[in-house]
Structure formats: C-alpha cells, structure tokens
Length: 85
Image: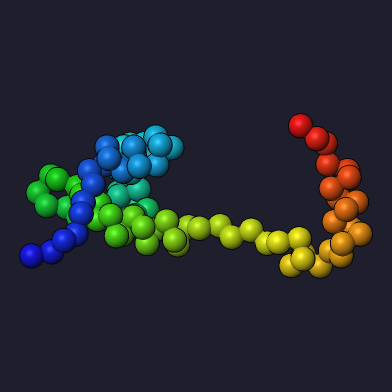
C-alpha cells in the first residue's frame, strides 16, 4: 500500500495561503498547467510529493552581490544609497 498523501483543491489553496484559489486550480486543470493531480470520478486530489516537486520547479534563486560582479566598494556605495527603514 502506498504512503502517498493527497490534498483536495481547498487544502491546496490553503497550503498556498489563498494565493492560488480553488477556481485558479480548476482553470489550470482545464488548461493542463499547474501541479499534477489525480482524478477519480469527480474527486480531484493533489499528491503532496507532486506539489513539492512543483514548488521546487518554480523556485526562484536570487544571485548574490558577488555573482553580479560588484566589488566591495560598489557594494558599500549601493548600501549607502539605500534608504534606511
């Protein structure tokens, strides 16, 4: 027996703090985009491992200042120009 956990559309929406609505998930399914899902009869279920893979696929990695080619003097100048909160 599989240990795969599944979430409903409502649970997926809650997982993403309501930023992805149930309606958006429905539209994505119709367009065959978004996270993978399983459909059994009328039930639509999202395997948690597929949601985690989708998260990794959509992960945005930011570059460090060094990767941009700035030296220490430029970094200090950028920091000095930044407003403080």
